[in-house]
Image 1: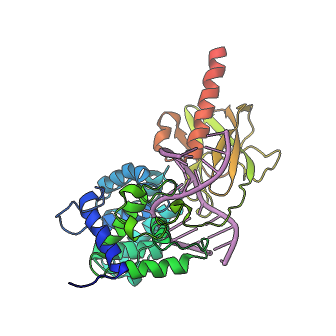
Image 2: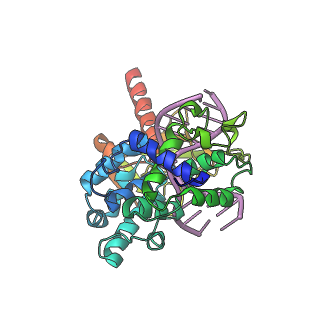
Image 3: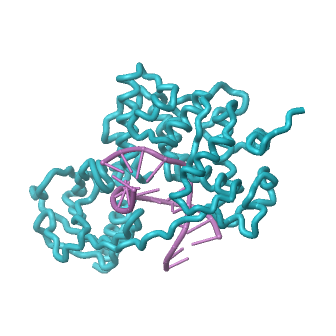
Length: 356
DNA sequence: AAGTCGTGGGG
DNA sequence: TCCCCAAGACT
């Protein structure tokens, strides 16, 4: 009988656990079925970037029903794609998703490259996603390192160098424990473990299949790994937004392709740089909503002060935009900030109307 | 190579 | 309430 090294034992213990406890997710091939569809694997991986499984679920269903194959997605108009992505966040992913689908159709005959290197060259596909798709969809041995894997590996080997400096050591360790066979299952097993057992806070070590292999489990505080550098304080910004209503329609603009909420439909707003007295897009008798709309982005928080007015039948705000039926605003594909802003305006209008 | 880029859920 | 965090990529 072959004596197993520690690295080999980790993989075999984890895969044995995965064979029994794997989460059943829409983008995973059911047990015993054919290999996963590269299109669905890629789509899920992009949606899952910095996004929870629970949040992705409905979007994945919607996208795969509407665009069953990569060629369907490649043929979608930009506005439809962006509107369908609305609410999921990190909108550069949606722009890159479309660019990637079109590149696959145009440059690769509608088939995804089956190597890590080929995948890595596609828009929106970085080191993680290339490795994940190569392993999961094409059975390649690839070292798949996401935040789950970083945490699990840092604990398995009790790596106490703070992130992000620890990344090279973590990656090297992940490489050592990645098996030649079933690398895709191994990657998904690591992520399942990180999501359900080896969680950031209060990990469930008592039911962990790797606790006998884990250096952090042997310490007083397994949750102390990985060590992270202190983070910076989040600045606060102020802005103004305008709800311009005309005959049952509201004025929507399209944000520039680059930058925050890039390429998305939006209510017109100031640049949020705290200009004290911004100029509205059109002259009108403005009403200001008393309570600003609070919204927290990744690197700052925003208080958006909303103003609303009705304008005459021929009035048109300056700049590009479109009149959108208020009753079907839900179909405009607004980012969450503007969904909240619209809700605040409607509530304010209703309150004022009730008062007479 | 640090900064930029969303949103919702959980402790 | 606030803070943390999530199957990261791009510049």
